[in-house]
Length: 94
Image 1 (cartoon, rainbow, N blue to C red):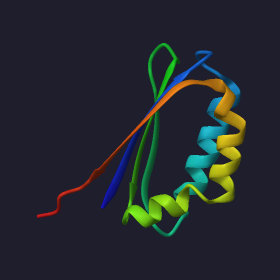
Image 2 (cartoon, rainbow, N blue to C red):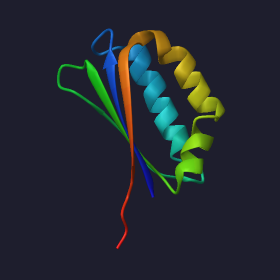
Image 3 (tube, rainbow, N blue to C red):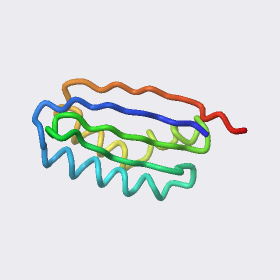
């Protein structure tokens, strides 16, 4: 399983436009065949958003990044983000 942990530092805390876009993207992403999990969390002060995503493999993650809903999310939110850090992992199964 391929995991992505995304930390997003927003320009404006509690940015309603960003929140609507990220939740719309998360909902659509959960219906992708290769997506196993897509969680959205926000810090208490509303300035940091954390995404936890799980996909069957790296290709499913790459496929996600080409979907219309992701591209729309990226278009709407790009200018609202101060910094974004993406860390990826492979889940060890035993």
